[in-house]
Image: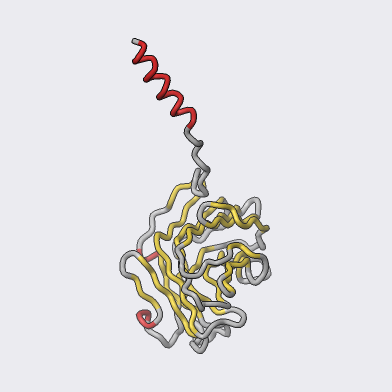
Length: 213
């Protein structure tokens, strides 16, 4: 009986000493159902999809050149190869983008993810890459040294509170106010910005959209 008591006590002690689970950005959220029809590709209007995009069933690779045409003939924006998440535009609630991103060294002056829709601008959040640093637009640092490694990106948009929170590898790195707007959606890929490299590229896998329960 003493052995049974000691064994039981050791199990309780082991449970008590176990480190508490760290909160995850997706706690309290439910992923929506996505199919390939939800991944709408935008690319230079004169290029075929295969010329600037590949998907092997796991990894989506998107690239564009600074000399490319915009995504629409009438557009005056810089070149892009982006995926616009379709079918889940939102105007209320709390929504979240999750994806694992990878930026090859040399890619710079580029937006790799954005929350589209704002009051007096096109976007309410952009994440740019400049010389290996991920930044909020071209401003404050979100994460340094992102070249040539996979990182987990979570972006939470609370419409009612008008806030956006960015997590890298599960750790909060940015919390900013929203920029207005009545309808929003998520985009990822490569979209030329200031002093962009001649070739811009990003890779993505396990992309999800989640909604707060």
